[in-house]
Image (cartoon, rainbow, N blue to C red; front, side, top):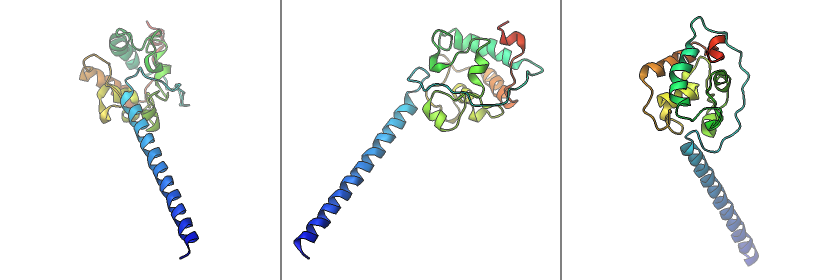
Length: 181
């Protein structure tokens, strides 16, 4: 085989080796970035702007389950800790009465891994696809830290209240609850 042909083959082999190394490096960087995003989100890291997903507006339920969730869960565990109020807006989420429903139902979470998995903050009718339920119940290995952050887990009856509300289609609060009364 002529020396020129051998040289061209070696060069082609070297180019292929460089391409394989680059592909391996790119895959490794993507994996590290994905793991860092997955493990770092505790609700206060860098955020992706929350975007609403068009969903039909549920009608208020006969019993105001959402108002109960607002008073017994959000007001007690999420607002009193100073995390998801209008001032701090951890993860771009405000759970103040009158605002919380619109920030939850049909909204893409700021956690990029959760968003990539197709979760919404609340997916009406599907607790397992609702980031709120996943974070409160520690279901599915939790994406980031369990909520409420730095506090004991919610009592089982409060988690069940949230799960049932989501399963029932996440009905909107009645007018008095929405206004914070």
